[in-house]
Length: 324
Image (cartoon, rainbow, N blue to C red):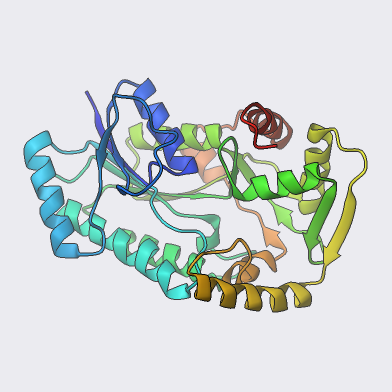
């Protein structure tokens, strides 16, 4: 039986990875903090582990003891991380330093996994033709990628998904809820060019990468289609059966000012916000598209869900569970 560790298992993406690993009959270890919700991790077959990311020595000892008692993990999907924070330094600490601590603990255990999948982001590449990201979130991802790529003896795969949506997701859900209430708020007068990936297709790509003999590669993950932000909203309105929606366009200059105040509020309350100065750096870019030809060629990947089908399934789940 294959044994897998999935970090950030209680999150939107991580919980779907857990379900797929269980479906395959694998022994699943869910990396979850003791204080985190386990709402979508109720299967009694799941084993839990609270990894001590903050201290490299403690984590190395913990991983070593775990492997000695339970055997090594054949696969690791490192999905833990943060996408928003009140402080830029948190991105480096959680997404970069903690990731390096886990990678080093696995390397020094004497039983490294057969494959380590690092869940990065399109934000790591920067928008359009920019060579590096200008957001703290994007930098934290690319720096971890670069560390992995400096380890030729460590079998890794880096996945850079674009906008991931689906049941249980909470950021795109905010937009869905807003449109359902009759309001469409856009930031910037020029539409963004976007790619998306439905959660079930991301899961398929990830597990195909795990079981492939290919290693030490970086792949973008998207459904293969390009949309404008207006196109996304139009499909969402149709799926929600909303004919009359008031559109409000917020200039980027106004959004930037608002994000500064939102950021200050976040620092005071110690709670992250969907809008903050780092997020605006991502939102202000007009081109968030990527090339998935390498993934399609290497793994034969083809998304099963286009945006409309994915949104139909997502909205149905939101309604079934009383979210909208």
